[in-house]
Length: 272
Image 1 (cartoon, helix red, strand yellow):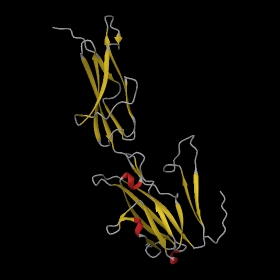
Image 2 (cartoon, one colour; image 1 turned 90 degrees about the vertical axis):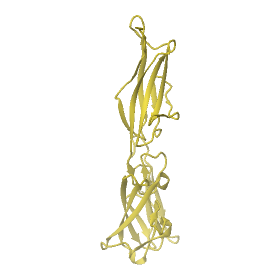
Image 3 (cartoon, helix red, strand yellow; image 1 turned 45 degrees about the vertical axis):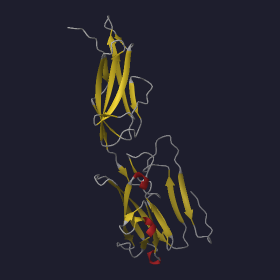
Image 4 (tube, one colour; image 1 turned 60 degrees about the vertical axis):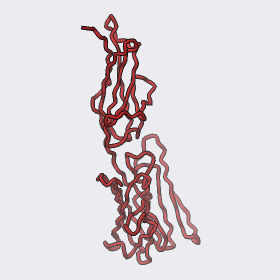
């Protein structure tokens, strides 16, 4: 019987890790051999990681950490709804004897977020083209893209709440530029509309439903905005900010931008 010395290879933490695509994967590990005094020694070892998906080695997934005992992948490096196996291997350089340990990484599917520009209410003048902008809507699984660029689908619905609760058809018309495919009534991420004269003084509520372009996914999100229809002479104001879903991190500067529109012949002053 040969007494073969094997190294120890350990990935700290649970054997199964659940994360999302937007998360950073960070693993810490240890590897060593025992010397004659039973002291753990790290010299003379080669340390390496590999990542497999469906038992196939993925050479594109390489740790960004400079520490050999840490394995790190940045946000969006891993695909949603995918199972990965990360394996640590420690090899003794003189004998080439090795040991390995693996952990399973399960990447879940993130949320969809419906977001409308302009806050909770916008003002539209009669007979002018106005816009409801849902392009800030985003998918947690997509990095630095939103709206149609994130592969999202959009549908819009409207109901009038003042002066009477009824359909919007008599007060507002949806313009062709709102559609990606007008014949199939496939909307883009911006809805363009024009208010009729008889719609002056009305308030309508528009709701956007954002869904995944993947027909196998049942993810969706909704957001609503009030639209007040005013006369041709009235100024309109739209506000936007650098928040995400109305949330801003502590220490970050809040920026609110106002977009003011007035008829050319009318002098208007603005105050905060």
